[in-house]
Amino acid sequence: TPHGSIDRMAVWDLTVAVEELGPEAPPLSISVTSDLHIGGVILKIVEKTQMKKDWSDHALWWEQKQQWLLRPAWTLDKCGIHADARLTFTPQHKPLRLGLPNGMTVRLRACFSGPTFRTVMGICKLLSKYCRHLKSRLCSSRHAALCLSGSVPNLYNGMPAHFADSPQTEAVYKMLSISQPPPAPEVIAKMYRPASVVDKAHIHSRWLDSSRSLMQQGIQENDRLWLRFKYYTFHELEPKYDAVRLTQLYEQARWAILLEDIDCTEEEMMLFGALQYHINKVSQSEPQAMMSCPAMDDLDSALQSLEVKMEGESSSMDMLVRHFFILAFLSSTRTLRPKRLTLKGYKQYWFVFKDASISYFKSKEEGFGEPIQKMDLKGCEVAGDVNVAGQKFCIKLLIPSPEGMNEVYLRCENEQQYSRWMAACRLAAKGKSLADSSFSSEVKNIQAFLSMQHSNPGAASAQNDENINTHSLVSPRYHKKYKPKQLTPRILEAYQNVAQLSLTDAILRFLQIWQALPDFGVSFFVVRFKGSRKDEVLGIAPNRLIRIDLGVGDVVKTWRYNNMRQWNVNWDIRQVAIEFDGNVNIAFGCVTADCKIVHEYIGGYIFMSTRSREQSDTLNEELFHKLTGGHEAL
Image 1 (cartoon, rainbow, N blue to C red):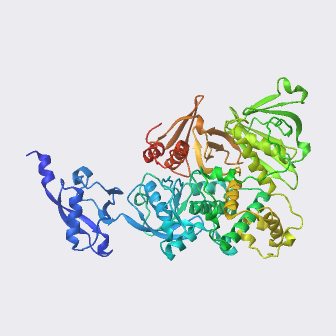
Image 2: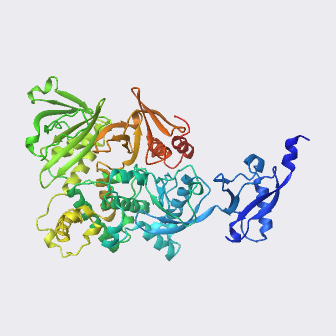
Image 3: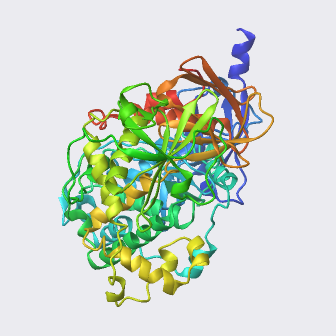
């Protein structure tokens, strides 16, 4: 007999700890041979415990290798297990404490042996039994991402039928689908707030790896994790059936604003506060209001349905050419903003918007000749700078160039002009022209947002609710700047513009304004670019990567995913390398996070872009792992 066969037939002792025997019980010693398969080992363990119970959820965990032995037909020899191996016979599903976006904590059993991707799928199905396209994260200090598929459920008494089984399940549904009352001011004051982009980068470094199990990533039984939306691309969201996800998405957006994870203007903050005030009132008085709205295909469709009719609005697009006041063109990343943004800081030109570019001339008469400059807006960053009360309607453009980002400020004359130019710039940034079908709805959404900022003289004084909890409605920055008695009338004044909205419409409007913020959907990581001597910030957004100067916060460069040709990770030196069209290559190492986290973020957004409404019921998990695994370039 060959020598190897003699070794495989030799009997030796394998030590296995069994959790059910208690922490003080010594490990079991079982006699095995190297050609015994894992299923046979488990059978010997069960027989030796002499305990009669259901062992079907148990599996072997290999402590030294930090891996599960889940292939029952594999032999000990094939697994590489020898007498020095430390194995534990333990349940694959263990209890977790899960922190939800609305601040509630639920305790449930989750799979510790499968990829975190599937574990989060299981958690979300358990919570709502219907998660058609959820992007989430787990965190205790850690997080994870996923997409789920399913079918439209039956409704009973305004909720999915499986939640109507008992008073307990109904209570769970209400906890998940109805906005919770805000905590006390002293509780909010103790909540963690990122003080800098580096703080935000450290938070984003805690995502869990979707391809590895919870156990492999050091998560223990009864650990507290956070469940959060991770990828900021939302479709296949139907308010009629998705009250749970819509409410949790609102809660995540709300706390991102209150804890200053994302910046907004003072006027936007007052409007956010008014919408929260309204949502809180309606949620407590009409707990089933969320389910009364018609189903919608996705969040974008839902938002577009919230059109506010504007007086005197023309539907034609042929008069889009307008006068503008423009600041300066910058070839560097440094901001040349005047100390006071007044009309004196701008120079008047005649602007023409065509296709996805802007051309400007000294005057209207010269508009048929050669422009002073033509700016291609495809791939640019677009942000508004608006104060309705002060009649300030500005658009900030960051336009990519070979040297960096050109920063351009446009000042509009009025709301109507701003709405149309802002809509045109947003579409142009996506490579779309004014002929695109979404232009009209984009204009109306912008106008609806502006209309909410109109003042209502005397409206606030008509309110009797003088003791609203302003600490739960605006961020700490404004509590340092104003006293509650100053904030209350401003919030109540803005409330008059949203008081007639239904609960669902108010939540959708809140999400729409959140999505329009300049930093919406940007996750930050501190990196070191190849060839650079200093740390910088990489912002990962739903449609682009952003290079940011760590010292002053200026955007240095942006790269859009639709120009990306391939990317990969050099695992030896822990470096991410990306190639774009035009022979543009970048490479960077990650300072505040593992490069696998960054790679999974990028791959996840590429994966999300492959999803369509027609395919939304089918989840291609293999493609997700191929795009996020980091093991080979596309």
